[in-house]
Length: 134
Image 1 (cartoon, rainbow, N blue to C red):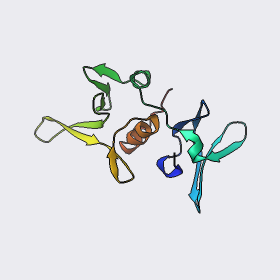
Image 2 (spheres, one colour):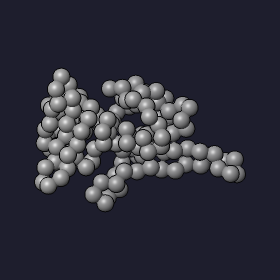
Image 3 (cartoon, rainbow, N blue to C red):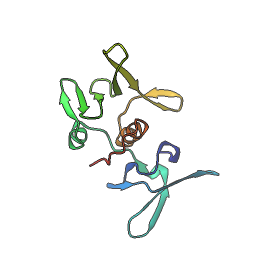
Image 4 (tube, one colour):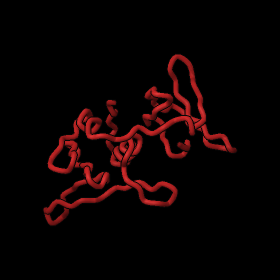
């Protein structure tokens, strides 16, 4: 991975250990991710891997499966299983439900939400500060 793909608070995998990113450094050729356990640890960002987003993780975090979607009650958001897109659902001025799809841009190319850190970032963008349970 690259440090600029991550944000403070994102969860990633480092050698089989789930870590929560507490610091990032992406400058002058250095590309590092840091976290704090008993002491501060820094590793090259290419040493960390994203955690795949699974239906089990969504369900652990309060998403409810309804047909081919996972909805997070009280937030009016959903994750479509077949597209891996994150949707913000709102009521329009005409009273009908409207949907806004939120994708992820990686290297200028639209991508889907396939990983836990991407879901964390999308939720933050929606103003949802919910701690993800893994």
